[in-house]
Length: 308
Image (cartoon, rainbow, N blue to C red; front, side, top):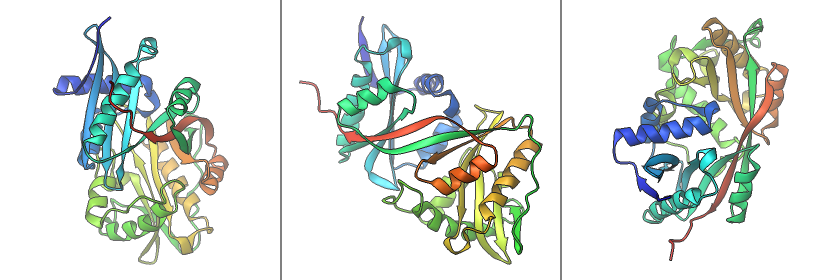
């Protein structure tokens, strides 16, 4: 059976690669519009397809992002029934070749928490676990949302109501991003780049972004990431509170505002993914009724040398 790996060159091939990704990662399914939005936020991006007898059966994408320009953020995916034929290794080699050409010698790639075979494959190739992001799901279908119940002096509203608050939200993000376990070495983008990449992407909507105000000061925010590929699921993207305002119930009020909005909009589930070391937000999610389900493990490892 002849096999081949090559860079995607046509829109049709990009769509085929995306379909493979969505098949293997249905909980993270996205649209081509979402992919295009992500590509615009990167310094460089490439997508590869693995073919078997003229049939696309594997996908290998890789990006260099401004937050970590020394690492290739990759995904190597093969449809389950075509695994153990060397296709994953071939994709890994092509992703490695692409990274090496750009002076990058480290790859980070996710595996599913419950995918023992992929985890073992990565560890055999000297990858190490650097993050474990547990997923939690809230079923909205039978839920009666609780009141927002913001702390005294705190007003919760949407960014759509006060679009001029963007710089205040950014100041919260600067503190919150730096305190996310696993993100300690990432560089914070400038206000303009952050606004374009994190707040105006394909899944971002001002009416689905909630802001906590103390007077005129933005002290916290919480936003969703939405995709037409999952019309019944709203994904929590970021919840952040300024350091000096933490421990007062602001994050809980923001989350309750999100739950109420999502229920009103007809969403059936909320999904969130948090590093296991981020105990405060995980405890908050548990109190709000979120239940754990397998998430992702981020693995970091070396490039695969070219074949002899």
